Image (spheres, rainbow over the protein chains, first blue to last red):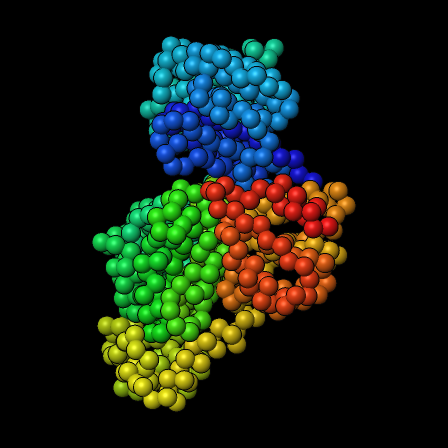
Length: 182
Length: 377
């Protein structure tokens, strides 16, 4: 029986989390030889308000395409954290933005925190790549794809002029979480 | 050589499947959750000399598809419930005038404007009986992005083979989700084209039954001249009210599907051999059901899945057979009981029958199906 791993990226509409989910699904199923399904919230919630993007990764064909019990969840806003943590698997992983989720939700999961958006803004240089910082962080947290697979998937999507910026964003996110785990 | 792979949305896979099948015309009007089909074709069709046109509304879009198809194009439109409702008059026209075309319906909640961003399977009966009058219907209901690609190709093949409209039913979930697809090489999937008239323009009759149940269709605007109407017509395409001719024509049009069920029907059976409980489900919900079957099998429950890939014509013979070997059939569907009516009709009380309906904009989950199986056992 195939092993199913569920990841949720959540935050506000416009933060690029759908793109982060797509890139992770590409890393798993195009760069690597895993199976992946990516889906996302649509409608009013996707245009501001809480928004989510889900990726299911498995070593075999995936039947049900939506999240059932989330293994690892990212939340970039308080609203998303409050709204989307209820289906995290007992003992699962939750990554929060320190600045924007002031009140970490309580539950049976391991919480990791760092200032994701401000890292993008101050350390990487552009707030717009916060989603790529978050992607690198989630790859480090979950180990569901190899570090270089995630990087390859990121770079295959960005125009030449933004390769260095995105590389830095991805690797900064990855390193920040690695440091938390060590 | 390594296969060409891509991570595609179901709607995108549908558009690329249409292009693979040789679609060279798209006439549409944007509507959630189907718009990505149009987006891809707006970008891709002009590259190969095809035509993309956004019409003033859904009715005009369907009309443009019929016109294009008659000139020899492989024509497509895509919409969702409200748009499909508007197209019904012209879908009926395509039935009676025997115009091959493909209509994609990415189902959302309804009736009327309903819930634009919510998934649904509530157009199952509309795909069969949406337009008035006796008519044959073919509709396919793929489940995965790979299958959306290949079933869109097959939908074009069926439209061209049987000279009739064919519907592709998706829903908001499999239309929008992304999965890895292996893009088939040219020649890998069968492509069927309409039969050219084997007679000269002078001898040509557009509905000549002596050629069998599917008379060859010439291209409008070519040297073949013929008449097209929504009225019942004789072999020459002109209206008739002669009882014998009308009866023969109506029966021929039903027969072209009924007599070819073996070639049109396509199902998937999963763990049905020893099943005591059978789940009958299509599209996205068949994936919930498959998950449920896998989980229940781990617990020792004898459960199987029957998945119609061709939804219409309904796979009545096989379901009737399976009804004779199981204790109960469960039909989960994102509506309040449509496909279950067909299952009831064909099983004729041979086993217990239970439905699971859901219309709140959320999919039927595997656990919901598992709970129902346990309740029934």
